[in-house]
Amino acid sequence: MDYYSKAISVFKLQDTPTRYVNVTREELEEYPTLKRAIDECIESNEDHICLETPPDEWERTISFLAKKGSYTIKIGGGVLPG
Image 1 (cartoon, helix red, strand yellow):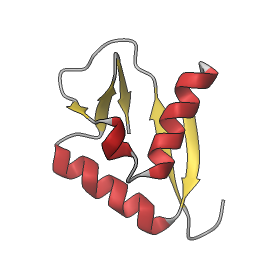
Image 2 (cartoon, helix red, strand yellow):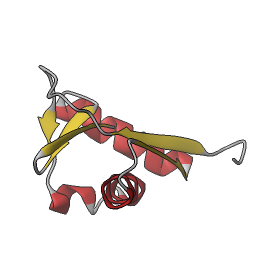
Image 3 (tube, one colour):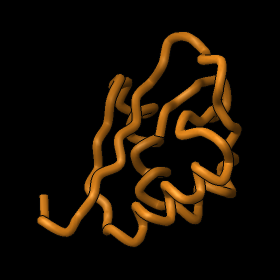
Image 4 (spheres, one colour):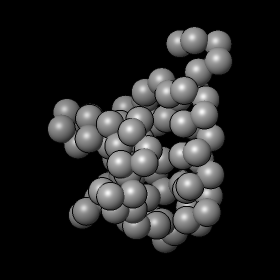
């Protein structure tokens, strides 16, 4: 991992937490690494995916989730922490 890079981790949760936000597929288009991590987690049946992302995209993603109110997001029928 590059010194200046950041990482986005996605975990599949078995139970729905008390606090999460809904994120649409359309919203995810603005955050390609988060979208790719979610897609890879779902498609691979892995419980955890961690992907390197450029610092500016990481900052935008974190800011987006903070404004939504949680770093734990719900996609379709599942809940994933961002």
